[in-house]
Image (cartoon, rainbow, N blue to C red):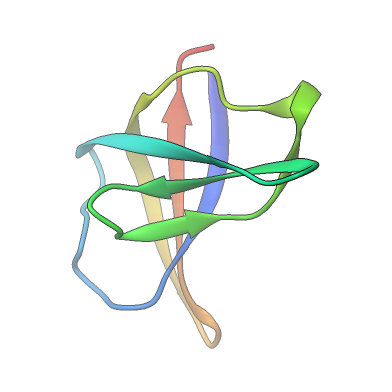
Length: 76
């Protein structure tokens, strides 16, 4: 299992335990991911550290001064 963090701007768009799908975005040198439908976005990943699974589960949501941090778990 692999856990990754995503930043969400508004509350209550997803809940812990919810199944999610992600979309991969490729730039010249990096990859990033969006929880669909445009709920939260990941940071950048190098090619050798890409998320291989396109489906996951929300593990936790943390309310921080900079927004909501969503932790999702993926089977890899």
